[in-house]
Structure formats: structure tokens, C-alpha cells
Image (cartoon, rainbow over all chains, first blue to last red; front, side):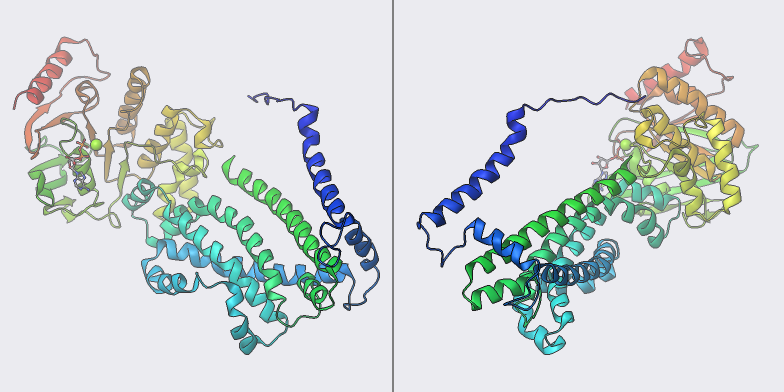
Length: 264
Length: 251
Ligand SMILES: Nc1ncnc2c1ncn2[C@@H]1O[C@H](COP(=O)(O)OP(=O)(O)O)[C@@H](O)[C@H]1O
Ligand SMILES: [Mg+2]
């Protein structure tokens, strides 16, 4: 028995509105620079950024790499940090949610570390990891691991207590309850963490690349500042923004698929 | 308060007392249940029926007294205790079939035995057709049948039921009560069935314990020696129903 989906017809105006909004935004930005309201040394016009983007597709100068290489390097760092954040944060949060001993040990430390912004870790990171890939991955990881722990923890804590009682009357062990009740109950929150943690990792990317980097989108921004090239700064920012939005859309789809799989 | 002398004692409750702080809820309750007996417990709402079952199943500790099953102190890790809760306790991420198997999985029954038992149980409660659906795809009465099937599947020493049909409409309830009696007759479990619905108690049980208001004691014991299937308008049925009603009203 399939229900027919209710189709709501969107007026054409509403469909076009987002495009109109984007067009006006860039149009106004272009005008502000063209008319000299803001001097070109302080803000690059979209057309200048576009030109630079096309040029940077093939030209590694003056910062040493093409835009695609920068983007690729940033992606690698971000995803390494992200995967490690999932791999460590989710199990830790799940265990903290159910096992009192783990909660007792990990929670105070976690609560102390949580308010420290990842960027504050940069000096220590340099001492520990030097300035290579793993230092950057560590900073990114710090940003991603916090939402993973919190979401997994909260997900487990939301397990219906009556279900736990039910399992107890069947003589279930703590581990059985964790495995068969707490983890499945936490899954929606865990999937929510996929999205939040990635956003958090990506946001920390620029901070991580403040560590002496020689490639990456954050590095592009830093170089633009050093060389006093506003179009390069803006190109770096826009690239971070666009790629973050694209990755977010992909993860959103993945999350929907996964949720559909368990919710049916 | 001894059950029929013929059957051996299965459950022995001795001096069960439960306090929440200063609030005395259960006051020195003692009774026995015979093997394979269907015992109903009726009492006014808030008198401590759920608390009583929670103590029996060891979900909460007793203040004094204890429960013995086959002469040993009751322990969910040792005895097969099943509990059908007032609220539905199906796992939404498991199919009907997987839900029925859940209790046996927790008790680490061998896979082959689980498959067999689940097939039997699904047939007995008429869920074979819907076994691959999820709980949110079946009706409320089916959801409660899943939990009943899961409870019987582990071949319980003691099956506790806390107003399992309280939230269903009357017609469905008669139907499920008949089914429950059939399951009990087929599988020969020892059942303690709690309800505030007197008619329901007289319909399903062999014996009824009537509880008083708080602090709760056993006020009376009523034998229901009627043939099955029982008839709600049979004068003997009505007489027992009235007797129990009077007992609850007078205190
Ligand atoms: N955890 C608890 N703490 C304090 N009081 C409780 C607790 N659980 C139950 N009670 C009290 O015990 C009494 C009996 O509750 P309950 O067993 O749920 O009654 P019934 O199931 O018969 O309706 C109520 O008065 C309730 O306030
Ligand atoms: Mg109750």
C-alpha cells in the first residue's frame, strides 16, 4: 500500500529566487569595487577572482601550486582528521554514554579540553608533531572529535529506559544491552555527528594551515596576505566555502541514505 | 494462601515489603503460585502493582522479604523471567521476527533453536505473514502480540504481565485475552497477570489476588473455577466479577 506523494507545486518565482539572490549579491559586490566605494587593494571584485581562478587552474605561481593541488592537499588533511575524529570520537562517546567507568575517567578530561579552541593548540602541536602533515591533521582532528563524542554520548543517554529494563528482565549483560540497545538507539545522533564533525573539521582547516604549510587552501589565503594580493585571499576563501558546501551536500545525501536504512 | 495442593509450588513470595523513603508501598506480602498457574492480581490504580512486579523481576530491590523460584532466590541471570510491560517495548530497528527472537538471543539460545521457536511463536500469535515488517508498520495490537510472543518464546519460569492490554480498545482486548489463554494452555507457563480491569482478571485467571490501597496488602483471594472459554454473561462469571468488585470497593 503505497501512499501517493503529495506534490506541492512551487511557483516559478520561488524556484528562481535563490539564483536571483546570488546574482544580486555578486552584482552588488562587483559594483562596490568597480565604483571605488571600496578600493581594489582592500577587496577583489568577483570578476578579478574569477580571472585568477582560471589562471590558477594551470599556473602554480606565485604561491607554488595550482588551485587544484591546493584543494586536493586540503581535502586530504581534512579527511584524515575527520576519519580519525570519527574513529576515536564515536566509540569513546558511545562507551562514555553507557559504561560508568569510562564516563568517570574520560568525562572530566573531556570537559576540560572541550572549551579550548583548536587554534590554541598550534604551539604545542609544533612541539609534538613538527610542521608536517600530522600536525595539521591533529588540529583538524581536535575540531572534529568534540562533536563526535558529544553526539554519540547523548545518543546513548537517550536510550529508552523501559527497553533497558526489558532487556534486564531477560538477564541481559551490560555489554549485551550496550550492543543491542544503546548503539542502535544512538545511531540517528551518530549520523548527525557525521555532518557536524565534517563542518567542524573543514572550519579548522585554515587554522591548521597556519602551521607553516606550503600547500593547501589555507596556505593560499596566507600567501595572498603576505603578497598583498586581495584577489588571492578571496579566491582561497571562496574555494574553502564552495568546497565545504559541496562536501556538506554529499554527506547530507549519505546521511539520508543511512537513516533511511535504519528507519524504514 | 496456598494454591491447589496438587501442583508443586513454583513461586514463593515471602514477606515482600517495599518502601520508597518513608512511603510504605508494599506491606509484608506473602503468597505462592503453583507451577503452570495463571494468577491475576487486581488492585486500584497507584496501589503498587507495577512496583510489585518490578520487585518480583528484580528490577528494583525489595526493602524486606524475597522471592523464590523453585526454592532459589529469583535471579534474572539464572531463571527465565519474562516481563510484558504496560508500554510497548518492541525494538523499532528490528523486524517482527527479530523482535520475537530478542529474548532468546540475550539468553544465548542456539541459533537453530531460536529459528524453530520463533517460527512456532509467530504461528501461534498469527504474525507469520508480517514477520519481516517493522513494528511501526503493524497495528498496536500486533505490537503487543510481538512482546507476548517474545515473552513466551524463552519458555519462562515466570511470566509477568503489567496491564499489557490496558491501552487497547475493548474488542481487540477480548481477542488478545483469548489468545493469551490459548498460549498459556499450549506452553504451560506460570503467569502473574496484573490489571485494574476486574472483568479481564476474571476472564483469564484461575485465581485472583485482590490488593488493598496503600500500604498494600493482599486483601482477599478469589478462585475462578469456571470452564473455558468463559462467557462474560454467564451468571457464575458475573457473580465472581461482582464479588471482586465488592472486595475492591470495601476497605
Ligand atoms: N521510584 C519511585 N519512587 C518513589 N515512589 C514511587 C516510585 N515508584 C512508584 N512509587 C509510588 O508507589 C506507588 C505505586 O506505584 P505503581 O506501582 O506504579 O502503582 P500501580 O502500578 O498499581 O498503578 C505510587 O504511589 C507511586 O507514587
Ligand atoms: Mg502500573
